[in-house]
Figure 1 (spheres, rainbow, N blue to C red):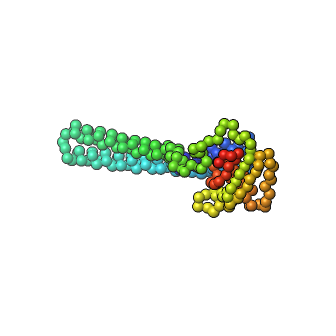
Figure 2 (figure 1 turned 90 degrees about the vertical axis):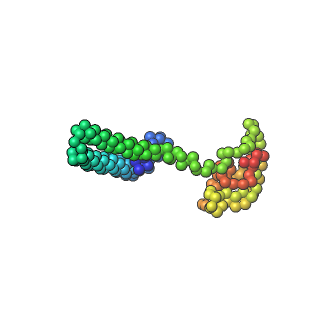
Figure 3 (figure 1 turned 45 degrees about the vertical axis):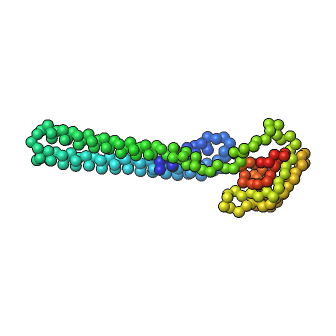
Length: 208
């Protein structure tokens, strides 16, 4: 939990440090930072409290076991050496057990970034970054654009936002895109990039 909420604190300070980001309202930004710090502090307090809870329960178990071993050694054997060895082994075994539990808990909390990286490796890559064929180094040479029955969908399960658009733009030809809000002007421009989920498009005789 600490690793999950801590990135929000870093992100807020990163936004404040970047000169290209405009902070519209300073009071609202400070409120967001305070809220992020509150969540981060609450998670840190919960981590410390759970660690102390585990330590207290471990110490209580250790005291109970040492008391039981002492009583058993007192009534079951007459050898002081055996009683002392039993007490020593009981105390050391519980100390090692507590240390192992604490290290396992800290290791799990520190593996948050590794878990996040592993999740990123399992995400399906976006289309367009693994093209088997690449254009020539001199591309583009003319600058023509051909769209044939172009359809664009941002998600596989979502309906297409562009349907069966065919355009042929010759070289040195100027074209303007006009339309109302939501007509698909930005989607048409986004469809020209290779990472868009489109079909049947070519730029300067190269099928993208």
